[in-house]
Length: 446
View 1 (spheres, rainbow, N blue to C red):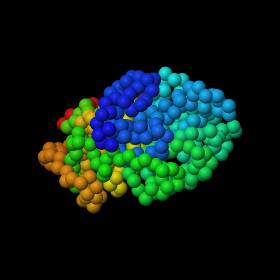
View 2 (cartoon, rainbow, N blue to C red; view 1 turned 90 degrees about the horizontal axis):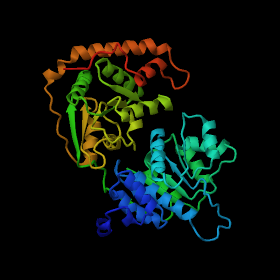
View 3 (cartoon, helix red, strand yellow; view 1 turned 45 degrees about the vertical axis):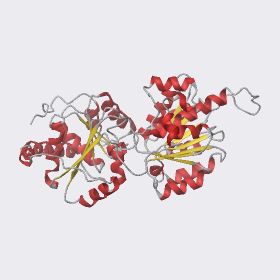
View 4 (cartoon, rainbow, N blue to C red; view 1 turned 135 degrees about the horizontal axis):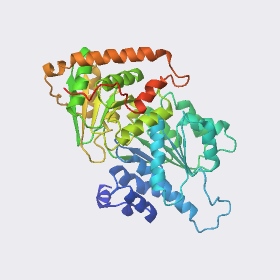
């Protein structure tokens, strides 16, 4: 199979129709990624596929292109269409663990299907269900959904069913099988046709993923673009062991060293994202938070401002670690080491994507050493230490302490102004997503 893959130089070589080859060209996809080159031919043959590949490897294209080709073949089939709907509504369904990833997958389907009148719908929480029901009434070809919201519509939306479903995709399958989604997923699998093609894509193969594989795939072809958990070669990874009380100083120092770069700062809790973003803004950085506690519209607003470059630091929880394709991310900083070492792979995969270079730095304190050692064991390498003079870092202590004090005051003041939905402070969120507060400090300089 390796010999075959070496000969694949273009999407046309994979057997894709000219309309799809042109769509790939428009998107700037010069040649198939490894997972695409290996998975697409089997998918085009009508086989169920399990795809294991590191984040940022082009998994969406690996399942979207075969589905669109099958849709075109179905519509253009010259054979008599007795008993066949010439306009195949609800042809494919893609399940995603996060709202943002679902929206991104739908955008990619729409871009690839822009020349073939593709109709695509997104069903995620945090969005008005009546509006989603109206979209379903237009009979989309492809539905991209989170499991809970899809099941809501399958249960309650009049006239909607997936009885005609031909393709099911389980993206980020390891995340779909956590306790938040497992019940909804089981009910969905009970209701949809058993005679279908199923694609399962995941960065990790867990016991639950193997169980799901046995339950809903038929004689699948397993594609492993990487034989173990790994990070890309273009990613420069470092760590810095710091006392817990000086962690914020080191974060500010590192961000000032890469001033002007686009960075993602990962924290463990939703409260930390808000506090750190406030602290950084008090120091003049263009930071914005994103977490699961924010309403869907605010999460998308934050993400769009980050993508557009209006804010160049995204302070986030692991809600932003899976699948999001933000090409311009220069650096990832792990403010908090993830407790699950596999989450490290997903976090640092936000940078150094599609052959580009990137930097990942992990701040490590005395309480997180065990988790960090598990990460090094998983990726199979010892990482070098980030170089910084402690005296220079601690020269920032007074300013950082004052910025933290102001942030704590702001959060305390806004504690009584919570919104009824989502638990956010509206004024504070608008300040993040709107124009910059005129009273905020000038650009941080060391």
